[in-house]
Length: 150
Image (cartoon, rainbow, N blue to C red):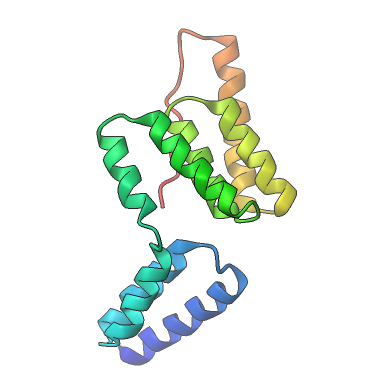
């Protein structure tokens, strides 16, 4: 079993080299490090993934329906690094949950300018466009947006 976990850690290492801005990769690797008792490495990865605990703050805001505060937090994170697509993706998904599909679509377009072949964002964009067309045809029959959770 540990050899299997070590192989999975190597796979996470490769993904992190390619996509160092995706927090979920660090969390996944941290879980694996903890399983094999490499706790210092696990802690380091958790700290990297949650450098400013923004997602904990956002979770509190969600529970208290503070949408504008969540939007502000995501926007601040984007303003710190305009090329970090993970922040645009997170904000787009948030916009989808509050039915602000035009704003979500704008974030998708920004991601596609940075990373034109991002299949995940292309799927979200397609879903948004489809939903917006359906909503325009039948405004009283609004569908719930698809939420892409991490």
